[in-house]
Image (cartoon, rainbow, N blue to C red; front, side, top):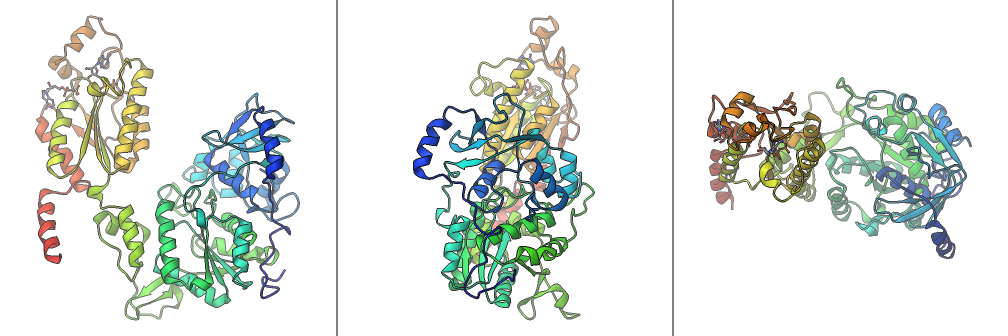
Length: 589
Ligand code: ADP
Ligand code: ADP
């Protein structure tokens, strides 16, 4: 099939027509009544995205979660059993469960138990993690985010006819959440058969703007800006900020008569080349006959040896091989660099020797600019984008952080935490102190000291700390927190880059001599049970960020050690920095 057969008609959907699984209103009412008598399956965020795209034909001709035959052929040949190209398994894994049985109907529901669909369970089959890892992702390295995630998936895949009663409800940016059919209707109004899709999960900087504009010029087409707003890579800029960026750019910097912005609720797999081919197939269903593919398309980052999972141009190469059959052409792009003397961007291989070039890496954007409160320069990004990014990423001294004290009862956690809290306030930070003993009088009232209760207590403190940190505050927590796995859980809840574990390493005999609350004496007499250090274990941290000695150092000295650590990491500004910053601001104002 030629990419642009008729200069005014969009490319047809893959397989001939768009799949549409949404049932009519009349049929829906009856089906709903029936659905309420069926067992339910609550879908993961990933399955909800897959369901939405299956329902609206983004994966045409696929019209259900894959059965065994489709899935196997996808693994081995990148094709469905029908022979159509399909590079990524779209499956519905479940835990074996007596409610889900072959030849029975079930309902599919979202996290809030809202009814989405009725599914006939026509197939149930086992899947094998290692096989998928190797064939789809080309690796067994669990640093690959999907391989890590797959460990928590149910062990059986189910498949069968789907009837969609309700698409997942989305409340944000409703005006630009377009299905494949709605997108096609809008693209048709441009009266141009060449539609060049751009896939992204990142903010758009000047280089991206430049390459999308070049691609559209080259193909004499319309730009279809189609960012992913479903699951991307953990740590990516949140989609709310990104979409505000795309909207600002489309309004100000693109030719409005040549661009369509709409959002794709895709749950990415980060499968590099195979994912790129999937992106091309999906975009064909939305009406695009070209896809821009640059370096490292759909890259999961680096593996456990620090090497990239895929070659930088593997994705271009794979999609290129299928272009004839799929009807979607690749617009390949090399990395663009800025030539400051000529004030323009150029592809890296076309830069004449001895020409000065500049670029800013993604890491530098975060570390050198945003975390330091520096605005990104205008040659690199539009001022509107720089503004949104600096709102989203305040400088590090206004970002949240959690200081977590752990150690035996009487080690000196509360005493040191209190001094630290005062010092942090003196340095301009807002602090919440969550002291184990105090928390037990309200948040955790009624919990005892069994292993279960202690874990619940620690997780509650961790949950509150994570919320405080998410909103840019400092949480100082002081609880015995004797069990290592629970502490590590809390670390993950907060995010390890904002978690400072402080091990108050006071020997048991010193704590026992201090015995401020008379607890050790009682524990020794057997009047209280399961007392940490006496008849219940304490797992010392293996990699605490800070270890304190309360025998050789006073509480004040120890609190200042922690303060200095926070200053060094940028979470607190040294007194001298605060003084220096004020006058220069006043001068410029
Ligand atoms: P925890 O919160 O770890 O149970 P506390 O801070 O409540 O411990 O109690 C520690 C006790 O040890 C306090 O009475 C404190 O005055 C005393 N202490 C003596 N030296 C130190 C020190 N260097 N750091 C912290 N506390 C100390
Ligand atoms: P945990 O991490 O064990 O939940 P918390 O800091 O919330 O620790 O509360 C522990 C405090 O409660 C200790 O400082 C101690 O004074 C008191 N406590 C009472 N009974 C026990 C016990 N069996 N084991 C440890 N601490 C106890």
